[in-house]
Length: 337
Image (tube, rainbow, N blue to C red; front, side, top):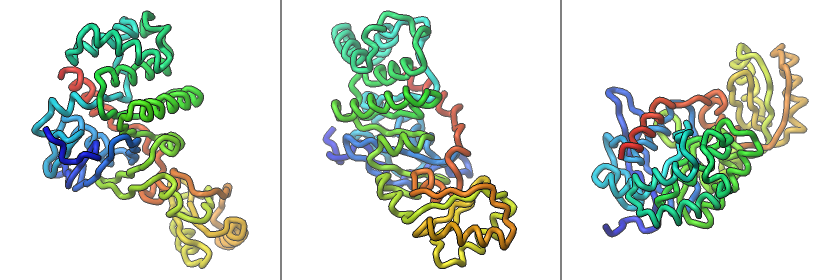
């Protein structure tokens, strides 16, 4: 098939997915170019998993059209599946098999010859520093080693697009950062387009050239991490304050000329100001005058977490836990193809 979008790895055009009266994804249009690491962030129920399931051909759009590597996800499912790899949140390895055997079994499912499998398996295991552990049973692997093996396995059939759903969840900080290096290396050396979902803001900031924030089935923000943070501007003053004071404090602070925006979330208020050093004394005066009972106050430059709060009104940490049941079903269905 001749590709309609020569520079695009993924194209969604007005994609909508309904489950009865509920709209999970609402008229999403998005183009992800070849070779990009794209981050998809959002609260639980935002539509991230539903979007991935449509891109993976496991669910058809109710309306609109989606393409992966130029192939339609509804009418050309086999071609799409040949061009994608997936790493799910939950481990899907066979602990009783060795690392090599897990890879070999995956290659057989994709119809790779013994020669192709052998060469590719050794290349990828060495790429993720598991060459010396190839003949060890996976049950002896650490969590980080298992995750690296799953990424290597997803790359075995030479996919053009790789979906990583929470790839570092549950790993210690040092292992997470090492895995970031592998992801960046794979993207750079093999030119693979990567779509990443994560609850770690530092992970998205470090890896993604662009980020899309989804909420209520729509992409409500889309840009590079740097530009998203720049849109907030100034400093962020975070007040730890009882939610019962959120409404009056928000109303009073919003009237001050030095305040650009006030966003309540959880047990905090985020106050965007131009000059934090100037604003803190003013804010504390108001708090004391109105008896808001501020437990603590901090000032910082905008982060991706602040961007997320700005657009969704909630902390991503509040949303941690996700649509795991649906993603497990996706993993099972991918294994049956």
